[in-house]
Length: 85
Image 1 (cartoon, helix red, strand yellow):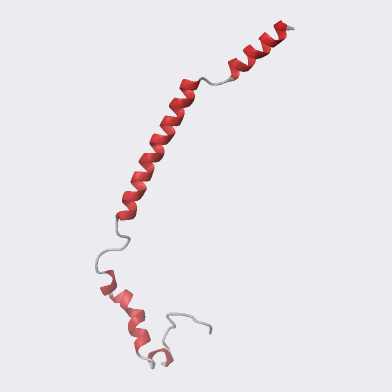
Image 2: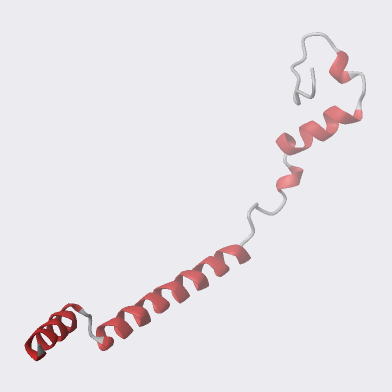
């Protein structure tokens, strides 16, 4: 009976990973995750749009279009925003 227990104990122990290998893999995972987080945070600090993008004629077109109420009713003009038509 002791032989079977010894065999099973040895078989289970042989299939288990070593604690040093497990700790090294975990440390590597934490290091990569920390580096990725630092990179992501630095990207979040960067602006998403360039300075002065609101001064561009393309971006001001909708604002100017909405200022004059007669413009949307002119024939032949395209609809910039399709509300509930």
